Image (cartoon, rainbow, N blue to C red; front, side, top):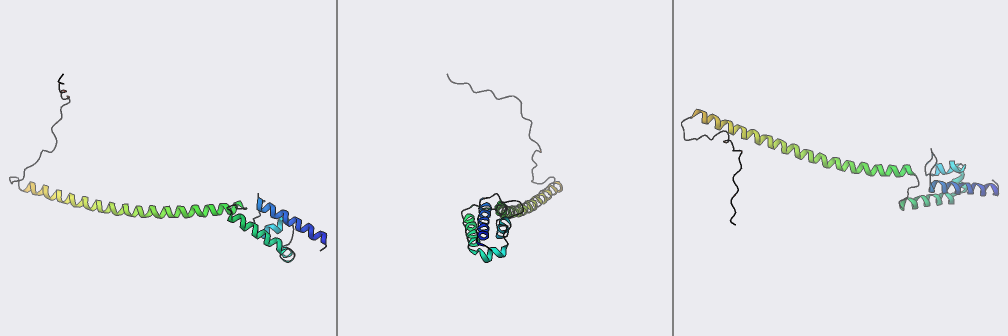
Length: 158
């Protein structure tokens, strides 16, 4: 490879680095070494053998961008965002399942208590029916009707 070819290839690699790191990334490519070589038109073996300093620089810049919160590859940023969302949703689902279990336990307890109360009430009614002249007094089953008139307002002392 002549010196001019090497300089030209190095320029293409640097241009491809800037394009991948600054975005937007062309369709079908990622922010990785394989895409860098594809975009620059340089075989990967040549990059590793002839331009290892450019590969190291690309890796360093990509890592620095990721650590700074800038994800050069929007698909990777989307994947990270979706992973975080999935983790949040799983945690929320776990809390809801625990809440549901507690509500089911409360429901079972409430139904059990209602059944016991119903049984006691039924027994007391049977006891009342079997001993009509005992010391048990029955209460009226409904309230007396309320009057529809309003009570007169108290007279003010003037």
